[in-house]
Image 1 (cartoon, rainbow, N blue to C red):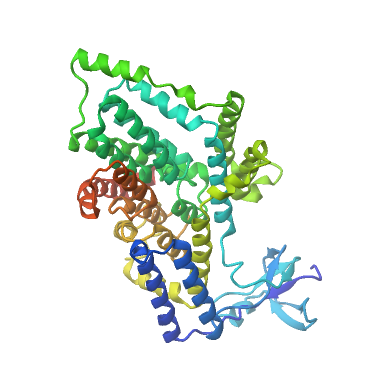
Image 2: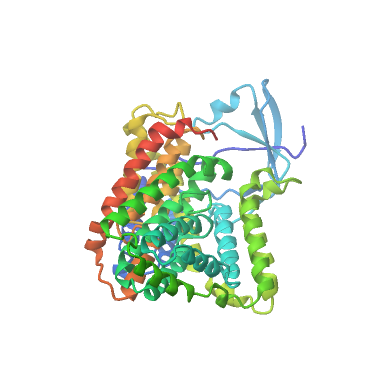
Length: 523
């Protein structure tokens, strides 16, 4: 055995009940403040940042946080069947300690967690909040955002959108179908907010030129709702997907195969209901069709392309980016171990090379508030884990879930239904990211297998719940902002009234899909 071998001994002390209750109140306070974000006039990063600082301070004062040094560069070795005494050398203070591993003795030394034998590596002194952050998620968001922002400078997305508009021949019925499908596809490869801004802005231009501006409200509402449907299509389409997918070890390809049938069905149903509820019909007379074709002919998709060389370069890189993300898990030469975050940052770096002298303008467009919010949120969740809050919630969920229902892909039907409906309702009034992070941690601690349908209940619920209210997701908030920009009246209550039929249909279809169809889909 390597002389540098050592054993990490769990040293977490028992947490008093009143301490757990205190931190639970802080978690409720965070969720409440996020729900009232607009009323208190504070950014997400500020809200989560303040709660993260308070949690860290209280965690240190109350002795909740573990301040042991972090082990890096090691690998876990299976303890031998026979007891083996090894000498552990603390590489910071030189302290020697003999520890018996193997033979089941480590189980007796720690009731909560068996000792883990680490071979090689070394320990680093690191602030406790650094390992608490999921840096892979941060890298994916930062890299993908930069890549999309730079690629959009080529005019590629505008060109695609206008080409789709021409395919409609000016028929609003066909136009809503095409824009709806485009919204879903854009939301799958871009972030939902960017997709909504691009599609929503082009929709306003198209309907204005077609003389159909009275239909803008219906178009924007349907498109806003479809961004969250499209956000279900791939592992990187939305942050809840990334959080839950990585926790459950769901690969990019598996996620796509299992989510795609639902996305196709929900897209078709949403567009059909939108056409009916907003009275968007096909052009009937020949005169209407001729006038619409003449108007569409005036569109010039090439107008936004300033450099065709960069345009085709961006198109090729977009295709390669999607392929690389999709095949990250099987990339050769151990590149797969670097993860999707590295791939996203790599492509972002390549796209920034042509703008190497003024890349700061792209850095300014990065949603730093979002990244700061994620980092602060991960810190809060980490402290909650140490304070036994998530474990307590987990025990509550464990008592509610009938028999855990983790034995097959669907799981217990009542468990999956409650998780999906509950997470959707929760996501409708506050940010779905804390919900996803919390439920993912709880399900992992409960031992939910990667194949269980309960993971998908969280994914579907967290995404689709954003369609119930305008504050349920950033993309629906962007849709409402665009509606108000064009002086259309849609207050909070009317949005809920208009969106609720779509949301209930989508959530109902998701429950049926997770319970009865998902187990039959290979992946």
